[in-house]
Amino acid sequence: MEQINPRPHQYMFRRSLLENVKYPFVIVSTLKAEERKDVIDFLLQLNAPVYSEAISGIREEPSLQHLRISNVENLWKLAEKAEYTIDGILRIGGVPTLRAWRDLDDKQKDVAVWSISHLPFSGLSRGSLLPFELVYEPPPIIFNAETAKIWLKADRVHQEHLKMLVEEEPLAEPALLRQVSDLVAEQSLIYLGNSLPIRQWDLMASYEPRSLNVFASRGMNGIDGQVSTFLGMAKPLQENLGIFGDLTMLYDLAAAWILPQMPNINVKIVVINNGGGKIFSKMFPQPEFQNKHDHTFEHIAKQWGLEYHRGFRLKNISKNCLIELQPCPKATERFWSKI
Image 1 (cartoon, rainbow, N blue to C red):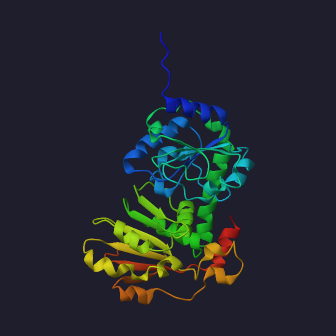
Image 2 (image 1 turned 90 degrees about the horizontal axis):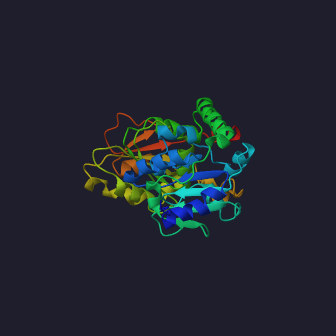
Image 3 (image 1 turned 180 degrees about the vertical axis):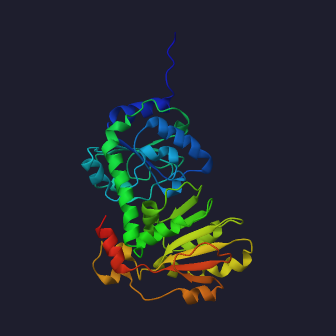
């Protein structure tokens, strides 16, 4: 019988990735809703450890729980400690937001990188781009998830530890994000405005499957126009929740002018007011880089006719509102020191 050769891109996938990688790791970023089921099926067949960002739409997928890595704060050290030295990264979907992805351009240049994406670029200065159609076909090689058993087990322990920290430090910034995520209604639209909300939502949000549609924006100029973008994406007949840092909110104070022209839209704007750009505190010790301030947002809410709440109340609010979270700095420091 004549042997049928694999399609060119399938052959390239087998030769360039699966046969040459012993410890693969998959990162899933932005996916279209209609693509998610096929990507889930592909990941289940591939059987490699996977990290799914919230914007992928499959972060909470129950069937992937046995392959899910959730703690990527110190990805490379954690994997190596668990005797799983990552030697290949497969990205599926949009360009990831996590720090470990950007490490591949400088600190982790020896790790091979492939991207299965609709985008016409790899998202790095290196790496191979493969057609998205690959996810619609069975992977030519199946990995043994047992090789990542120690790592996966350690990740489950980490999740339990985070739950304990939320109870110990309920006023810490990450704990407040967890409490917000616990109250989000099913099928809500979630918009994460800039780096810190993205990072903390991916780390802390509940894994309860609720068919959430999560969007995010970050970048060198990502602080501008975030609230306006959220309002432009908000949809009628559902909950729309935007989560922003205080500096990001201050940069777009005029955004809510449009709300009177959106009578069928209900939005909840959550502002994490930690008194400045705390994401820079670990990089720059000088206080000037953090843009510290003592502003609150109650009068901003009144200016635009928004109902104002201090705390993480989300339920039983029928009007457009602004919810201000004021984390305790000392509790936040204790929280991060215990991770």
